[in-house]
Amino acid sequence: MEKGIVVKSTGSWYTVRLEDGTRLECRIRGKFRLGKLQLTNPVAVGDEVAVEREADGKGLIREILPRRNYVARQSPRKRTEVHLLAANVDQAVLIVTIRHPNLKQGFIDRFLLMTEPFDIPTTIVFNKADLYDEGDMAVFEYLRDIYT
Image (cartoon, rainbow, N blue to C red; front, side, top):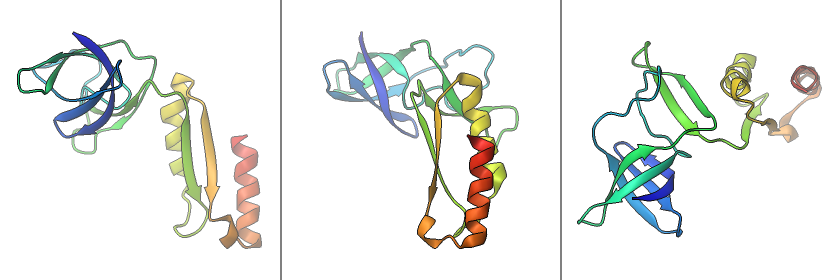
């Protein structure tokens, strides 16, 4: 078996970058047990995996190696399950704007609730600052004081 990192996830297919730098299109077969988490998707971008090549040139993900951390959210369809967004995250960057569209502070809070429990360093970038008026700048300064 070869080891690699999942770099793309599209439905039931995953692109795995192998240790030699080549990419292999893979799928999973069967069910993976991942602790107590009820996941809608067992494999995420960033997962380190062990794969086995098949005769057709594709691969099978046989093992998901232990994760350092992950980012997940509640599944929109199944309230009892979690949707895995990314694994083994080194840095998270949240890009928001105060206007166009208007910022909902709860969006920032929910994002931080996904990253903080795993000590994932997070940077918040405020975009479209050239559109901010005096009131928007006051909101920016207020939020900067809260989140720094």
